[in-house]
Image (cartoon, rainbow, N blue to C red; front, side):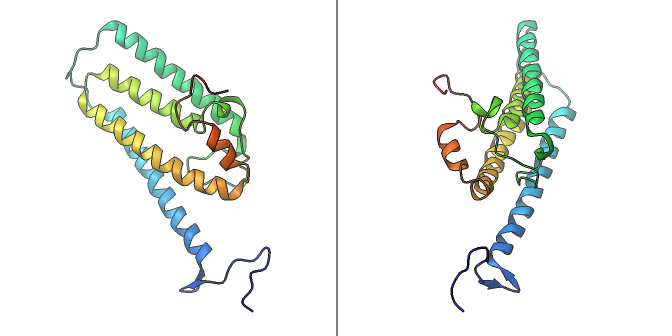
Length: 177
């Protein structure tokens, strides 16, 4: 039979796998690589010995400390609202539910926002241009990681595309909601 039946995958076979199996396997590989890269970048940022490429006055350190603490609070609140659905992987686990309330009302990826706030705060306070490179790489990684996550969420939750269309990715909009 050549028809596609509800609940069945299309039988395009690639070396014993359906095209859907191949896509899922590739997504798992990319997700694992993204998590490993994230751990590596954050570890490098923490372990990098400080230099003084620019001065960091006490006021800057005070402000960046407050930004970093706000980042921690955002991560905690957003992670808590995910409950058992929380994972470092951009692929939602079986417990994941579509969250559009709380901090998810203002940005689609508040945990990434919190981590980026901490990263940029550390960079500004560090006086080290190498930290800038690490923060930029982390930002690019989170953009790619969130793109994969959103593709999977759109397949899993029919309401996701509409939510994503009206909600910023990382930075809350003043005019939003």
